[in-house]
Amino acid sequence: MSEAVAKVTLPTRSRGWLYCAIGILAMLSSTVLTGCGNPSAAKGSEDETKAKGTLEVPVVKPTRQTITRLIQQPGQIKAYEETPIYSNIEGYLDKIDPAVDIDQRIHDGQIMVKVRVPEREADLRSKEARIKQAAAEVIQAEEGLHAASANVQTSESLVKEAYAGIHKAEADTERWRGELDRAKKFFAKNVSDKQTVDEAQNQFDQAQANLEQNQAKLKSAQANLIESKAKESKARADIEAAKAKKDVEIAARDYSAAMLEYRNIRAPYDGVITQRNVHSGDKVLATSGGGHTPGAKPLFVVMRLDMVRITVQVPETDGVILRKGDLATIHFTALRDGDREFTGKITRTSYALDERARTLMTEIQLPNTPDQELRPGMYANVTIEAKIKDAWTLPNDALISDEGDKKCCYCVENGKAVRTPVRVGTQTSTTSWVIKKRVKSSEPGKGGFAWVDFTGNEEIVAKNASSLTDGQAVVVAK
Image (cartoon, rainbow, N blue to C red; front, side, top):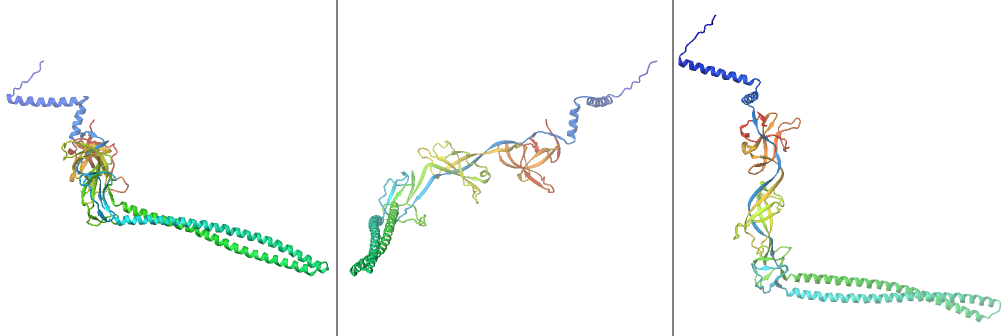
């Protein structure tokens, strides 16, 4: 039995719409079938994820680098040393040598001009004479000591002589005492006569008187010895006094000589005379207290130019990163070959900033040319290469501007883009120095935020960060 097939004929336009509907159904069926057990199913999953708001982003981590910051500022030349020269004594200037004038080279210790001070010369001669007088007094005192020492020796001899006389007198006294005792015994026994007793008595009395006389001589000699020693001590003191007086006179002479030496106005170093304010015969006044009369001009002003100082006022934002030894390149537009380049290094800074201008005075010490072409006051164009070592850096593309032109970036944390404010330092054309990042405070019981250092482990969106929103779901691109 055959099956009947009904044939339906549609209009031409109706058939076209039917074919389109059948094609769309076929495509949908193909997509469903392809997603089941086919590798391209993952792509469909990613599209679905993107459709839900999750974005794939490239990330970068902070790296440590040495950043070179080019600081370009105008500067000027100053002399290595500049010395105003005054007179330390009052007088009249001698004739000034024509070679001692502005723009003339001078040498260390050279006498530039002399001051006439005849009264000081006379004072020096007087001091010399007093030294001679003091020296004579020393000799006189030494002679007095010799005489006093001789008197001491004489007195000591007299003392010894007195002691010897006493010993002899004592012996004679004892001898005649014995003779007198025997004569009295013999007389009592009628062995000798009265005359013998009287004679022994007289001899005893004479010996005893002689003993007393020598004892008196001893006391006198001892007193003379004490007096002689006292005179000897005084003579020694007189010598010391005379020598001290001589030393005082020598010191006074040396002071006068030193003051008189100030009549020679000498050059303090090899340099150039840049000012001359006196003429031959001018009266000059002495300085006082290490200074000079207010309003008074110096005799000369001398500058040392074998070395020069290039001073630059650097703004505080750049001044804080400057370091001694940073390389500097200098150009002087006033030189005939204005493109000539000089190189030096930061020698020193003032450390403290100018309170009004907020600038740091920076100095570059530079050897002058053999012809000393670099002159004080000349204008300089200075470029300083400031080095920041071991700085955490990020590509400029990873940073975006926040309100008030503050910088921030997006850190990827737990699958989300977290908007993170950062403190930015020096920037180059491609790289920025990131100093701190702001995070939620980790101290227990305290809310708010804290500024912390970068660790280098942060994953930061590298590009197109401005298209993100805080907390948006993201995945890191592989």
